[in-house]
Image (tube, rainbow, N blue to C red):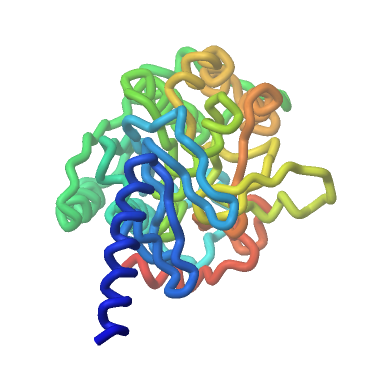
Length: 340
């Protein structure tokens, strides 16, 4: 009986201590059973609280001074063009619509998997160029299967072509495919102007892991709160990042390590504040085909922090030999099969 009384007394004292800790905003860890009593969670669950605190053990918590209010995901699709250059085949060698559907599926699955994302507004837009009706129906049915609303914008390339230089920086003619790509990017920037907070610009050949969107949003909050400034996040650990040895900076995200990078392609997450600040540079990417194409982005990264994850949160489904494609040390086939 004495032992039972002692256990009850310890239990009561523990409950009181937990309540006091919660009141003062502290988190306590029971390292015996790997639980956080103040959160009613185990250590292998998502323990950060969006808009409030980012918790990473054993470093403790970062108070969020830059909370995320909303996320607009703008997906650029073109199911009739296999690859921009049209002279190589993608990994798995499927029709382009297969990559588009798997890309969208992975994004929707990632949104549903992110428990913290339920606390913010997530808006979805598809800017499509010239896809067949049957492919648009497949895209629509996919959104329906996830019970997600989205806005479909049918791109009118003619609205933008008059502002696109007909020769590029290498003094070569700009192809029709590249012009439509530039027009699609321009339309996505216009849509970004209407957003409330974060924007994720994404092409339709990136397949995401289930934790991708949640990790990007919570990492944006954590690091922007630490550096007191908004930033860029690229979801992909590109192979070209390992083509030369150069110094970098390492950051701790929500659940992954991230590193500073100076170059990305045109899939990235940032804020409306950043888009407004660098509007003219971003828009120049839609007016002149630079060399490399993403050079205006790289110029912005000289002023703003841009980071990418290790390991990758998304794979870019290009040719297997492309240095801008498949991320190293990732099970590509598994990610492909998970997004049927």
